[in-house]
Amino acid sequence: MDNYLSIDIGGTNVKYALLDKAGNILEKKKIKTSHEKETFLQSIDQIIEQYKDKIKGIAFCAPGKIEHTQIHFGGALPFLDGIDLGERYADLNIPVAAINDGKASVLAENWLGNLKDLPNCAAITLGTGVGGGIIANGQLLNGAHFQAGELSFMILNVSSEVGWDDIAGTRGSAVRMIEKVNHAVGNADETDGLAAFEAINAGDEVALRIFNKFCQDVVMIILNMQSIVDLTTIAIGGGISAQPILIEGINQAYDEFLDKMEFYKNSLTRPKIVEAKFKNDANLFGALYNLLLQVNGEKL
Image (cartoon, rainbow, N blue to C red; front, side, top):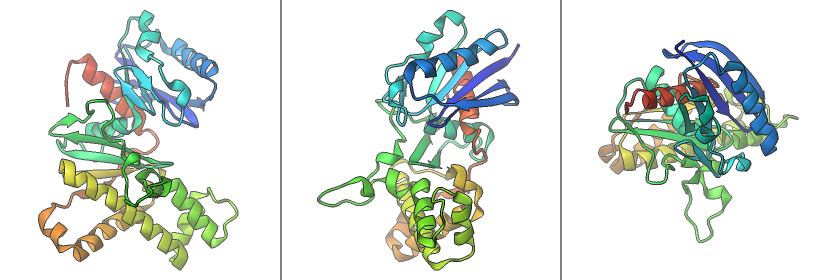
């Protein structure tokens, strides 16, 4: 019995899968995320009850700051604050691990994806905000307070009164960009990502202007990361990364910036910017890899 249960706690859904130690998904399901604490915890209990006799360990992934197996703040799910998953399931007598969703994404790519075995790399997830995970000198970067890689908090526009429109979590929000494109071109459903990219791919002038500005903002995030941790490769994930024009647009925006800023071009080595291999399942793989590293007493 070398199988493990991986649980990805998201704002909309809780995804869970039974995987073997090589990362093969044997079974995968999802349920809606309850935003009421006790109902939520009961739903997790029920999932674990189904698999507890078939697994060697449980791997969790969740938003927020995660210190060992305790969640702090909870990001989009503030009711998670203070929950210690290892303590809650200690009576099962199997290993329990937990990791922040941004860090899980870079572990997934470094284990089995487009960042495989790279010692200096990062994953950026473009969604409602901007998630991040960084591997530096072969180590997952946690930071002193387990908050390294919280890219949404990066300030992209410094003014006398910094507001929400100046932070990376807003300016790098794929959801916000899609809403702006749909509003601009008159699409009824402003949340429809496919409709937004139809306009972008068709070359609609207004849609392209919004999209190009979005790519420029993502480039600012990458440049700031690169100036601090010096990476070779950055994988871009999130639902919109399935659109080929996204990676093309970010790479083009990066090159255009370097052409305008000769000093950066000559001084700061340009990282490769690639599509993340894993889309919606990234956190399931990353959470499992985090567990396996702990079980085996290994570090990246």
